[in-house]
Image (cartoon, rainbow over all chains, first blue to last red; front, side, top):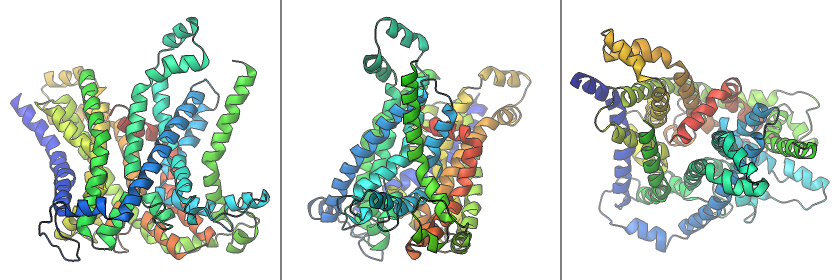
Length: 291
Length: 272
């Protein structure tokens, strides 16, 4: 038995070492850098305490805008993908024909890179020839420079990201809906639950674990939203679509504010932990019970 | 179900399909137009003449990236799937004290916002002398693929009855032999799911390529497409052709093996 245990540990050890370095040691490294004065081209490990964090929270207008943008983006994106996903999953689960065709179509954006999606959506939003501009012309509406507008740029990006990720939440909810035993639904119907009440009292509570999963994943994606913003607007115009993850990249890799970039990364990380830690421990408990 | 309700459901599903397919339609029709036609016809009309000049220009711009992406995606896919497979095996079939803790330790990496590792990652690769080397991307994608592949295989092996292994033990096979003779052949579906998921994820990744792909000979296609986007302002046929070239490998995999893609998606999501 001891030999088996040793072998088993040998099989898992490479993964543990690699993840230990690339995840845990790197997080510690980032945290350490965030406490230094390394806001220069050359490494400077002199201790700065919480100076970088204090600067971000008290003085840095760009970071304040990033947080505001991120907290506007987050509810629209999370609720948008979840509500649309639940709705589409419900329709797909109602015994329609061509169900697998529709499912394939809804999930298609998940198979392509956010860079590809970003480029396509920039074209759709193009103020002179883009699809939206052409439509507005036909309808005799005034031309709008969507991505160049302080008002519309963020909503435009939110729509593109909802397009990208709704297939994901649809799949999560569809798996959840498929897990509800038919007898439960029939019993509820016999008891007189129909339509909205059937959903509110029976279906929604029974797909709760799908809701939790979708919520955690979408919140986590919102907090680290970078690729599509970088491709579509680079955070502009005038920081109207800037996000903490965009600023982190700029500070850490373009402006040599390495310690500040590290501090922003730690803040993104801390915000992510708020939703991820409870989820991992409940998920861990569930799989343990199953095993 | 009443006819009117059926019609309503199909109508909504079709409208939703148009929403999801329209950008893909724009991608394809624009890539086939000449630059003149992009500017003269309405953007959603079908091309009057099929013109491939956009593809030629785009391919000149990003072909190196297309090759580079294969060069790191395939090895990183193989390494991460292999590590996930032996790890998932160890965690389910040769359980040891603390194996659940080890699993949580690995699982945590799945939810990591990559921003928090970017700076050390670049310094680390530079220290190893791998910055600007294709191995920096292979190692990086292997490392951050381990959590998801381990999870996929752990869930997969949980569904293989342990009695199969015990039968092997009675025959006097040791653990490694059990893995090679019994587990590996049974693992094919798991390997397919994990490989497709990893292929799509690694190919589509942008952030690691952005910070590690400083040299053109390691730069991924996604980063090259983004650069093309900056360089080819308003040349929409070229940009859409470039986007289509970038998307084609993962689109083909998805259209052929979408079923397994969904399993990877849910393998990482639902069972957590």
